[in-house]
Image 1 (cartoon, rainbow, N blue to C red):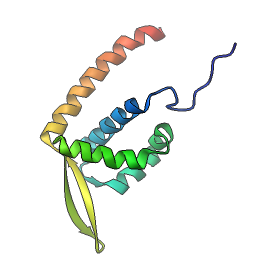
Image 2: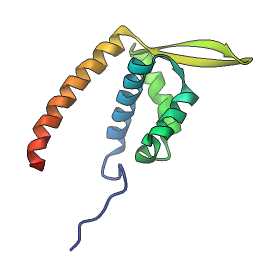
Image 3: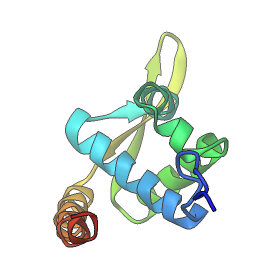
Length: 118
C-alpha cells in the first residue's frame, strides 16, 4: 500500500497552524518592523505561507493580531495613508522576548527531531 501524499499542511491540526501563524507574525514584525494587516497577508502570500495555511488565513490573521495585541506582544496604532486610516502593528519588548524564547525552544526540538531522519 502506497503512503498517502499530503498537500502542504494537511497533516497539521488547525490549532497548530494558528500557533505557527502567531509565531510568523511575531517573527515578521521583529525582523521588518511595523506593517498593516493587509500588507502582512500580501507578504505571506508572496512567501507561499498562505498555500500552506489554507483558505481561512485572512480571518485567522485578523484574529491572531487581536489575540497578540491583547496579550501585549504587539501594539497597534492608526495612520492615515493616502487618505485612508490603516491599523499598523509593531512588536513590543514582550513580543520580542517571547519570539526569542520560542525560537530557542523550537531549535532544540528541531535538533531532537533530526535523530528521526538520520
